[in-house]
Image (cartoon, rainbow, N blue to C red; front, side):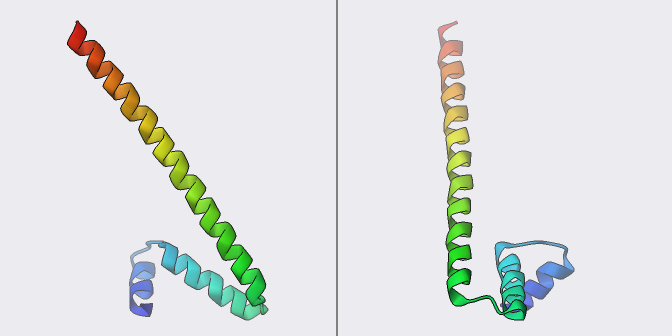
Length: 76
């Protein structure tokens, strides 16, 4: 897995895995407790879910608008 992280860094790509790896290195350097790490990971998971939910809501609204437009076009 470390090879993938190095390859991603060489390509200038940022992935969730590479960011988590950086975060873990920082936590190791500063001596972050396991409880604090766990709390941060729960917070990150919740923020990711919130982003996905917003994107799904936006896609649902776009689809609805598209279907309404299509139905209207068939009427005319």
